Length: 391
Image (cartoon, rainbow, N blue to C red; front, side, top):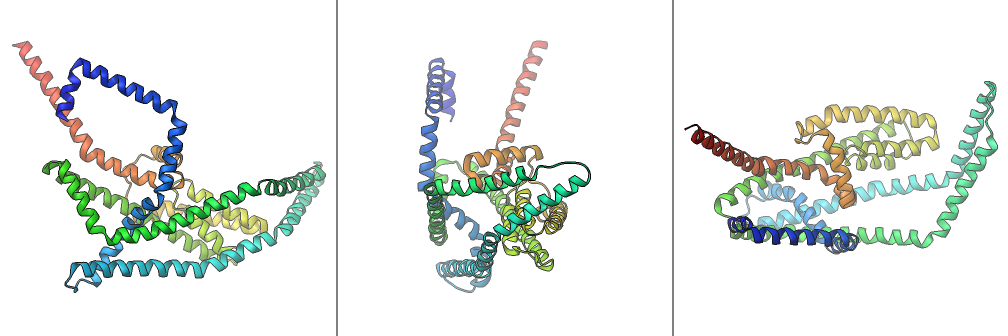
């Protein structure tokens, strides 16, 4: 690094470096679409490996807990680690099986009911329009029902025609979804492999870092990485717990009030609650859409409930889980979510906030001390110059 700074002080090297950087920037801008396609294709190819690394990272605390608490009496460390990984895999498989057995039949039933009742929902919508028209007539306001009915019929006809004309595209989208699902399950298998080889991977990464960094910087980087790990796991874990609490509460409320589509709406609310800022709005809108087709009064009651539960979630549940802010200004939250969505889709939306929190830790631990040191050096130099001039 010092050699590079010394070279930059030489005029010919500084000009050469600036020219090369300008040419590189121009090439990137000129071929941005091709570069973007290449990056997307590359990440699509290695997506199972990325999913596996993320999956292994998230399951590592559970495996470590089993290793330290349940299998602590085993003498061989390799046996303890293998037993903990196997038990973690068994727990994950059982949890997925339980979710599939408990939720998939209900989801299929809800979706089937929704599709089968579409003609009834259409007739109810027309009946609602007729009631509104009759009420308007009583107040002397005339509404052309035929125009509204024609609009509804045309919209449904256009929807059916769109499905017929774009069958190939829809099948292609379904194939893409199937490919992503297969990549996800392959990534889970990779995750268990990475989890089993955790010690080897960590040892390799540690050796590589020790070869590049001096001991002082190596120790500081370890402290920073530990803090980043704590922030990230805390955010992800508490976000999942929060989503589970909101989803279960929604499911119980829908069962108690005997509203339809309880499993489907509860899952939608729980999953979308993971997404910061926009998630609760999306989940509530989906639930209201399903319920208003059945009974508008149910949609109104659900709207009131979702407002209350989200208010409690924002004012009580999340503050108790997170025990304060992650250090990110509220204005930047929206910007980070939009940028994360543009860069990496749904995954970018989910990870934008914890990555920003990790950057805050990196700034506090690494960048800010260097800036303060540089500022003090400049001030000291300025004071020395002023003293010498006064003398």
